[in-house]
Image (cartoon, rainbow, N blue to C red; front, side, top):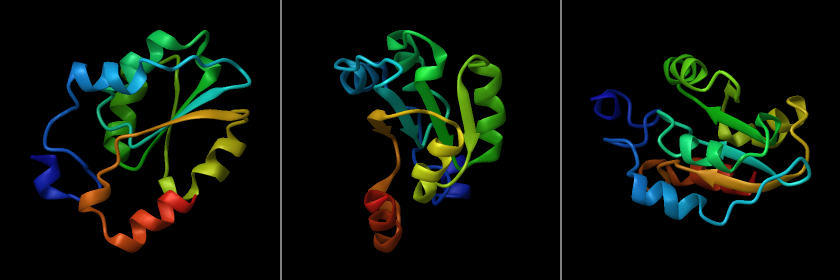
Length: 125
């Protein structure tokens, strides 16, 4: 329902499946010099699989545009840094969070339903 109400802020009709989450995270091997940046965290369907791969919570930053989702995510994953923000400014947000070198970017953004210029801005970031 949230997707239908605001398709530019909610990218999926339903959360990603465990099969997709496993496929997206199977090769992750993060550490303090090789951190994970997740953009478009949504409801955290992929996040819980990322968390299993983290040696410590400081190796992760999640950026989510939808403030309601951020509040839910912070309760669901209190040890992870999840911030409200726009993926177009991911570099600045990661620097302000002192994330360190980003080695992995996981995205659940709905690029096919975003305006082309917005998708390009995010991809160029």
